[in-house]
Image 1 (cartoon, rainbow over the protein chains, first blue to last red):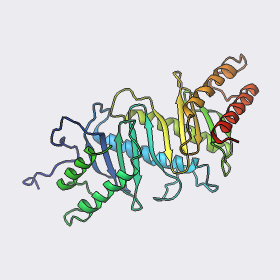
Image 2 (image 1 turned 60 degrees about the horizontal axis):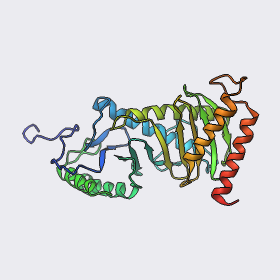
Image 3 (image 1 turned 30 degrees about the horizontal axis):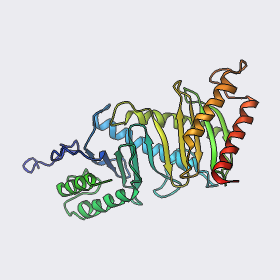
Image 4 (image 1 turned 90 degrees about the vertical axis):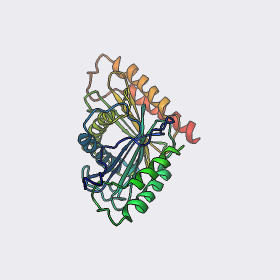
Length: 169
Length: 141
């Protein structure tokens, strides 16, 4: 293991490109809350340690999904607040925007959550997230050496992802 | 079909002080609206912590499948947020206008206790008028 020098979750920055990326960072979680991937391209401010940051992000998304399911004005029968929702059940949010960043979110039926944090003026990133999910399926899931539920350590996936994000919007 | 489904005002501690429902399907009882307001308050705060860049002031817009949530936070920490149809325009202007109504009819009311639920008739009347005008402008009816 040490001999092959697998990269850790806390990423080394990709090959330096002065142009910089359009996105700040990206998270991928599985349904149990394990952070499978955390890519950081441009993050001047880090308030918490990596572990706490991941947990906080997952917790925020879980609660926001619960909130949107309950607050849905078009559904008549709403579950109780705080009850875990199955992927795809109830109304889910796909993005939120603050004055400093925009967070785009996608959850697959298998419970894989993809999160992309970009600058606030980015457009609708649902299609790019679907594309990134396809990349995940092709490079990670179909990799026979990858164990599901463990952090992603596929160099090819990382490079393709970086390339794709660099080319966004 | 309303462009605006509901309106919430929460005080700086996260407690709900005003809730108006303008046409969402399904009932929302008082306890639920209180819980949702507090939950939003916490989410708003957490989103500031996760910002990659300094100077974040919290969520301004949340886009979901069937609704959008626009939030305005005043300098004093009072948050006004509105649940509307996806893609509704000019919500920021409406929120600022509602904040003005709040300062005129609630804060300047000598019988209003700070951070307490709002029970000001003039505020309700003017708010309904503002929402009605918004509906006419946006939907033409």
